[in-house]
Image (cartoon, rainbow, N blue to C red; front, side):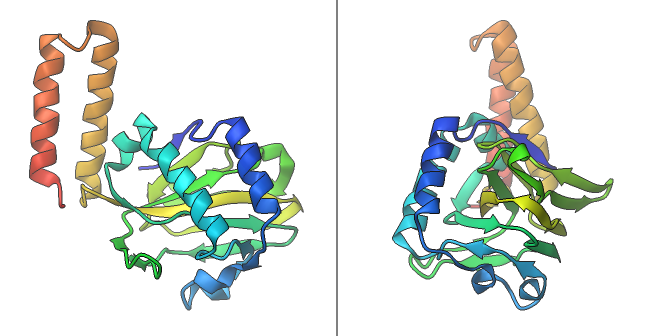
Length: 227
C-alpha cells in the first residue's frame, strides 16, 4: 500500500527547515548505507547523530503525530529518528531494499522497518530527475511530490531515486515500526478507519453505525497489535 500524505509540513515550516539544512555541514550519504546499498548510492546527508539532524527530526515527528492520515495509515509504534539527504547533479540511489532492522546508536532504539517514508522538501519544479521509484506487484510507480508532502510505502519494496540532472533535491527519510505487523491487516485497519471518518462527516460521531464500526476497529487493533 502506497499512500501520499499532503501537508505534513507547511510551506513556512519547509522554508525554515531548508534554511537550517543549508547552513549545516553534510557528509557522504553512504555512511548509513548497508553493504549492498552503498554500491548504488551517491548523495549527501546530514550526519545522523548531529544536533541539527536530531532537532529537525524531532520537528518532523511532532508533525507526523499530529497528522491524522499518517497515524491512520501507519498505526505507528516506533518512528526511527528522521534522516535528511540531498541530491545534486548526477546524484542518484540505485535499486535497493531497506534493512529489515534499524538501530539508533544514540538512543539504543531498534525497530523492525515495516514502512518507509520520504518527506519532500523541494518543489517538483526545483529539480529535474530525482523521482522516487517504488516497485510493486502492479509495476513501478514514480513519486515526486510537492514540498511538505510525504509518501509512505512498504519497506519491503525495491526502490530507487533516479539521477538528478538539474537543481537540488532535498528530503527527509525514515522508517516506521507499526503496531500492526501484518501488512494486509494494517491495510484493512486503514480502510476501516477511513470509512469511519467518512461516516462521521456524514452522520456525526453519535450515529449508531459509527459507534459499531468504532467498536470493531478497536477490537481488531486488540487482536492484531504487537506492543
